[in-house]
Structure formats: C-alpha cells, structure tokens
Image 1 (cartoon, rainbow, N blue to C red):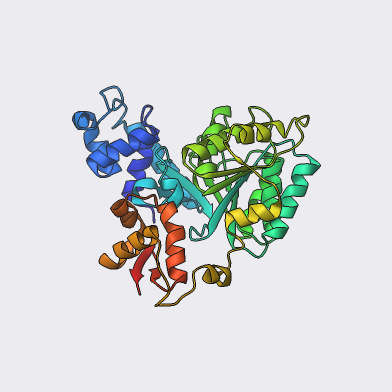
Image 2 (image 1 turned 60 degrees about the horizontal axis):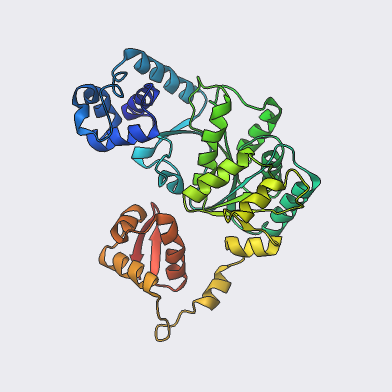
Length: 369
C-alpha cells in the first residue's frame, strides 16, 4: 500500500545532496520522511553530519510534484515501493550501511528463501556457460533464489537457467522501470516475472542506464545475498566491484578459477590470489559450501534430537536463552539484543529448529519449545 510516507520519501531522496546515508540520518533524527521534509531545513543542526548546504533542497515543491508523478507511474505499472526505514527491503540488504533508501520492485520475492548472487562478464565463454549449467543441474532440488544483473553474458545465462530449472530469479537493474537495458533482454525480463521472479531497482523512472549506475547497482546484488559467485571476469571487470561490496558486507565470495592466459579468468584468479574469494574446486564442493546438501534429515543426523544427550554450543545457548526470555522476539530485535548480525543468527536458529528447541512464526518471530 502506497502511503504519504512513500510520497515524502521519494521527494526527500530526490534532493540533490540527500543520498541513502544522509536519508537514514534524517530518518533517525526526525522519525519519518514526512517529518524530515517538514522540519529538516530549519532543525538540521540536531542531525550529525548534516549541514545547511545538505538540507538546502528540502521542501522544494517541485520534488513533491515529481514524487506524485512517480507514485502514479508505479501504481499504473504494478510497481511496489519498498522503504528501508519501514523495514520493507530484503532483510540482508537492509543491514548494509549504504542500502538504498527506496527499492522499487516488480514481481514476487520470497525473502525466506536462501539467495545466491551469481555474476560475471558479458563476454561469457563456453567454460563459464558449462559451469553455470552444471551448477543449476546440481542444485535443482534445492530451494533458493538466484540473483544477477540482467546484463548480457553470464547474467543472462543465470536468469535463463533459473527459469529452465524452475528456480525463482531476481534481476537488479541499473535504471528506472520506464525502460529495459539492454533491450535484447526485454523478453527475458518478462519471462522472469511470468515465472514468479522479481525485478528490482533503486532508480526512479527518470533515471537512464548511465555508466555510474551499474557500479551502484552491484552493491545491491552483493548485499541481498549471503553468498556471491563470480563466474568469469577480466581485470577491472564490473563483477570485481560486486565481489568488493560482498567483502565489505562480510559475505561469502566464490570465484571460478581458470587459465592465467584466459582474459576472462584473470579477474577471478586475482580475487582468489588476493584472498577476496574462495576458489571453486568443484561444483559439488561449492554446493556443499552453500549448504544446499544439508537436508533436514542430514542436519538432524548432525544435531540429533535427544533431550538427555543434546548439548548446545555456546552460540546456540545464547540465542536459545535470549528467545526463551523474550517469547516471539523478532529477528531484528534478537540481533540487537545479542549484538550479532541477523544473517549470522538465521543458521543458528535453523539448527535450533531442527533440534526441536525453537519454533518460528511468520514475520520472523521466534519462541522456544
């Protein structure tokens, strides 16, 4: 549901010096985009790091008119407007300091499923194509969402293989929903939506696919998933930036190594050499590292349910006792309570669920059993 808060959020974000980080500072100080819009120009001094020049654009009626047009465009085209401060972003992405204040969405996205970001060069070789095919074949029984950038080459292959194997896929765009770049992938974008996938962009309908947008887009691809796989890339390729963002966000990065003479393996080899990515030795090992082969039966063998024998690890005990003391605690509150990022808590909660110690409810709330 689109509200007045969405209107003011779009207008506020449109101001020339209000980027995602300054937007969050204003929200923390004023409580909402609407209040920041009304008060920040006069009361900015209470917001750390915000000066008079930063707020000089706030209150401009032209931005409100733009926001009204943007909302009409979104309503007409079935576009959802997700606001970070209303906790409407995918949960892992929302943890990033520079997460987008606004994320526009077409299609469906099940945030409960595991996400895997897979990126690479537009100049895909048969080696990269073979790896992607082998990966999707090996992971076909797993439930997850693939994430990529809808570019030609590796991205296109990832989305197409996802559709072939009935895996939901999310494409992150570097422009607004008024267009589709590259135009060759327009039909693919439509198929993604038809097959239950998602299109995301942080850019409003006035934003064209400018060069700088693609690097900015890559942080969303990295931030939305706990793991990023770089298939093929050259030195300085765009996928290197995606891997760097993933490193900054303390996420796992895997790279497909290749011959040192192959130009589109050199970037991957460099990531491995610089300890910025784990080398993929085989598809099987990659699948194991991602946790896809840990079915409930196999995990249950690792953590057998027996009231007399089960002994929780220190980390499991901390999470269990915190949930026990605060029934129906939310994931965000739990993360704040024990000072551990939510993406690190989720695997522990899964272990506790399989042990029969914890039960989860919709809205990411938990109780002990």
